[in-house]
Image (cartoon, rainbow, N blue to C red; front, side, top):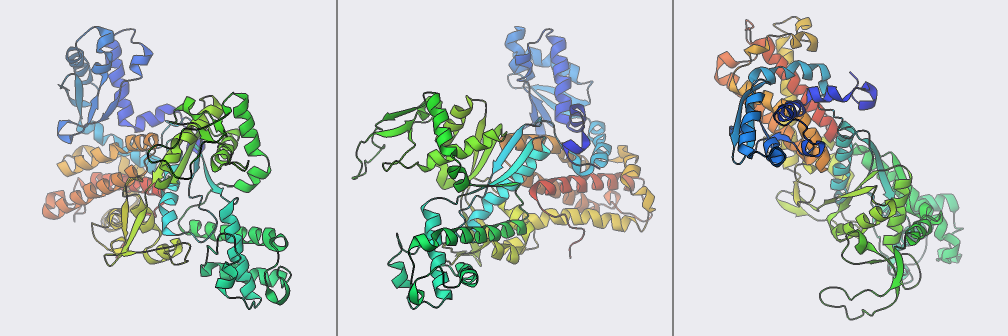
Amino acid sequence: MPSTLAERGTAKDVFVTQNLFATMRTHVLAALHAALPGLPNEVAARVEVTPTRDPAHGDMATNAAMVAAKQAGRKPAELAASIAQALNAAGVAEASVAGPGFINLRLAPATLRAQVPVILEAQEAYGDSFVGQGVHVNVEYVSANPTGPMHIGHCRGAVVGDALSNLLAKAGYAVTKEYYINDAGAQVAALAWAAYWRYLQAIGTALTEDDFAAIVPGGLQYRGDYLVPVGNALAAEHGRSLAGEDATPAAPSVWLDTVRDTTIATMLDSIREDLAALGVVQDVFTSERALLEGGAADRAIAALRAKDLIYEGVLEPPKGRTPEDWEPRPQTLFRATQYGDDVDRPLQKSDGSNTYFANDIAYHADKAARGAAVMIDVWGADHGGYVQRMKAAVRALSDGRDTLDVVLCQIVHVLRGGQPVRMSKRAGSFVTLRDLIDEVGRDAVRFTMLTRKPDAQMEFDLDLAVAKTRENPVFYVQYAHARCRSLFRRAAEHVPAERLGEEALAQAELGLLTAEPELALLRRLVAWPRTVEAAALAREPHRIAFFLYDLAADLHMMYNRGNDDAALRIIQDPPSDAMLPRLALVAATASVIRSGFRVLGVTPVEEMR
């Protein structure tokens, strides 16, 4: 079955049919309009149907009476009572008024069971949404400086950005995955010097590393062995032509451009390979240097100047303790305070060159010019102080039409045997991304990185990531899918294969699903479409991992109850009347797990040993 919005060309009402929360909202609005004819659209837009905070209170809750009471000229609780009465005929087993006027809703079991054929028909496309309305979203993530191999410090942002992109696509956005190549500035020059040292070694220089480091501006920063192959490749291609006599260093004008370009290209090839091993394939790679050489920064600054948003001025001293070397001086400033920042921001340094901020404005202007109405940047938490100025710049450039969201990722502490594994990129002693994948597997890396909110620090326990226990979330959820597939292999020993297909199972007597573990699993399944929408709107892909873990727990609970009570057993010999309905529920569960795994980039397994 087609699995993307474009392939299906499906209208919005199909997604509403899949999403019981959206369906119930239409019933709530109908009841509200009946109680209050002429309800203004702006009031109706504020009506929500959400999960209850406590499942004991019901499956859903709505604020309809709270938001419309003033317009109706009635007390919220009174209006809520009339709405609740109308909802009792809309697939609701119970509608009750709570607190000052909220309405709690408990769905009828028949309403829950009716979603099983919907899931079986949609399969992995269940939960696809129209909420994004095809809006073009550019998600830029990883964007590590091409100064070395990918390490675990880059991994979290890569996984979060990729899963978020997948989530937004499932929610109906048009998504572009982008990598911004920071190939301009001092760090790239430092990388070129480090690669040049490896080149000199390859052609047999008599210099020591310390001798060479003494002539490098700023010192020899990147000493990792990963640059040895680059030096060998330069030597193989250029011989001694990039060096002076006796393999001594030549003037930078002789070699700098060649070494820099070769090194960046080599590092980018390595980065792409590492990302591919993680399951990350981005659509666009944008070069900072190409943008700047093409005049993008000058155009962006000119655009802001034309809006009278740039001026020459003197900033106030930094808040807190003033640095000893601080002195007031005229600067070219952007009026960031007009767009929510706490201070105006400099666009040029004292030597007249652009600040990093000016270059980043140019980059975001380029993304907007390519059609991105929404930009999402996934950054390390150390860039938190940079967020407001970039949001201000995007609002200023677009006159408020475009938006920038920033997802901040905290660092990851790696543990092995309960002890921290340390890394240092400059020294060349670090846990590479490829090392991590080779040790625990891609699926464990991706799922584990999404078991915490991105802005929360986390520990990646290498031992736990390969443990076959409930405490290892990827194992627990993959085992749930494998258990589903195992049940069908066992069922095939008792039931003809044609009765186990999705179409046949959709015709099973689902009214026999009455046990509480079965209904609990149904409640979880029908929450999937709403979970997708809520996670996409909040830019929080970790919610998908949490949902899958809870879904797996519900499945295992139903299975274990069957082990304790033979009447609830799924596979029985001879087959019980409830066997096919339970298998339909199992098939629906497997489809939703696969749907979630597709968002996370995790592989559903058929069996586990």
